Length: 158
Image (cartoon, rainbow, N blue to C red; front, side, top):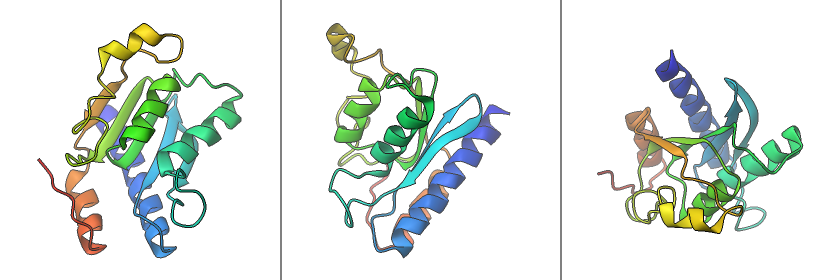
């Protein structure tokens, strides 16, 4: 059952990423989930609006507003691609319980390239940074990679 939920939410991220591509932006989509329900979702708009408008950032901002709290410790963030370092620090600050993503990005990811999502040292800066979230990778990796390939992006998988 859990794997089916992960796949359902990653598929939504892939759909959102396609919407971003169709709108001329980078192919990233993200959803924030609590208790098996989508609280917020977003697609990338960094090329159109603000360079910091990554899908994960927008989705977390919308989740905070929807839930009326900056503490997202009961939530899971899903993304079609590994969160970058900026998004990873924000995930830690928002106290996300878990992060699930499809495709690793060893050249720029906040989990694979830089150890932000797993960094135990950040805990000493509580209450700013929470304990590391659970991280699950590789959900629908081939589907996510195909989307990037079709868009002409080079993603180097491990």
